[in-house]
Length: 226
Image (cartoon, rainbow, N blue to C red):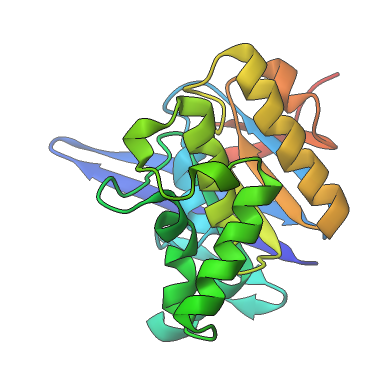
């Protein structure tokens, strides 16, 4: 199994109480599988995605990527797995405003260090061409529309040839037409490159396009009722 989350628990300490967000949550995702996670606001969907991607350590449990633990090893190993195996797409794009588009795309490759700067730039330009934005390579993020910025974020997520894409509300800031285009591209990439896609969304329509829909409720992941 490419991605396996085992008995994940996560809580936050509030001034007068403890908030249990994830309680013994389990998830397995195979290569090429597309999984949507839905649930009410505040249910912990983004927290779950951060735990799956090695961004937020759980209180208990573990995440295995291709059989390798994210949380039982060192921080260095976790950073390497995250950089090489996982691509992130966020609702708010998280593009650096001082960098041009091509620099934003090749930023993840700088953490891996296997490509020269010229190689990184060539790879980034290739990805921008694939998402239809090669002509905007020298533009800054604020010169692009929301949909264009999300496509840049998608190109950035693919920079290191990941095996898993984690997408947190990737259409949340987009109109319905542009959102459909972004989902089309995510699903096409999953099929073409045999990538696992785990997507958090509030949209039942977007969720229904994935091969499996899970609901995060009371800290656990359960199949959506038919």
